[in-house]
Image (tube, rainbow, N blue to C red; front, side):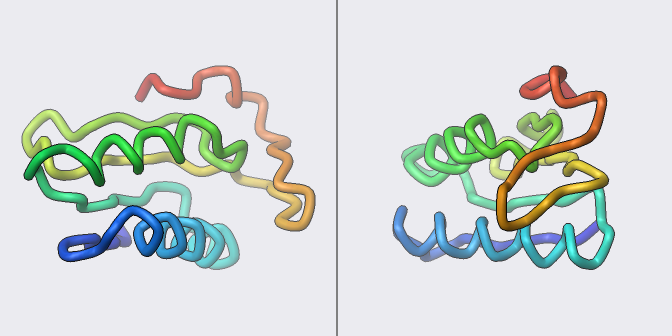
Length: 97
C-alpha cells in the first residue's frame, strides 16, 4: 500500500502533499493509500481528515485501528481529475471504511 509520511510538515505543506499524493495514486490506479500524520497534538490528523472528508476523489477513509497516527483511504476507480468528480457507485460511503 502506498504511504505518505507527513511528519514535520505544517498544515499548508500537508495539504499540498496529500493532494499531490492522491492525484499520483489515481493516475497509477492505486485504490488504497495510507497517510501517516503522527499523533502529536492532532493538528495534522484533523487537517488530513477534513481534507479527505471534502475530497470527492475519496470514497471512504478511517483512522487505522492499530495506529492512530495513520489514516487509511480508498480512492475512486474512475475520476476526471480536472473536474474532481467521482463516478464510482460507492461514493456515498465516504467516512466509513
